[in-house]
Length: 123
Image 1 (cartoon, rainbow, N blue to C red):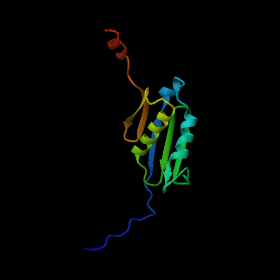
Image 2 (cartoon, one colour; image 1 turned 30 degrees about the vertical axis):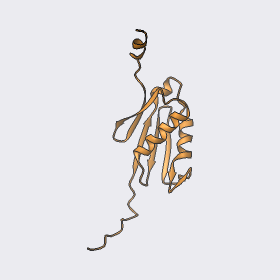
Image 3 (cartoon, rainbow, N blue to C red; image 1 turned 90 degrees about the vertical axis):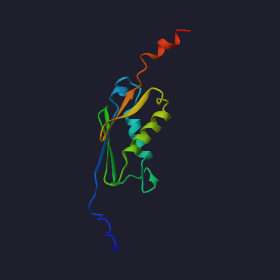
Image 4 (cartoon, one colour; image 1 turned 45 degrees about the horizontal axis):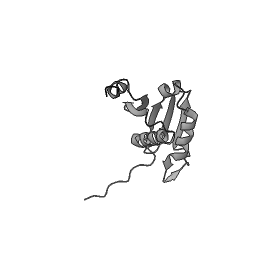
């Protein structure tokens, strides 16, 4: 069996993920600047948190979206994990959920609890 050629390091794969938090921000329960700082402090690059360097960029677009661009392998699932961790830290996990709206987008939505109150009143 012939040895495999090592992967070329010059070819950088670009990953671009967007987290849309417009609905919770419109209600005033979600702080985009705080979320951006949380991601900056928690994203690990080469096993070290908070040291993004040139590999990972976090940009906030107004008060509706955060874009994470990475030139190194970066998992969309890892971004969802960190988003859920932020929601739990701020006690918002009971009201807001993280939903994949497309291949590289996440959207924060409120749980649909419109019919939950009717069932309890029948006792």
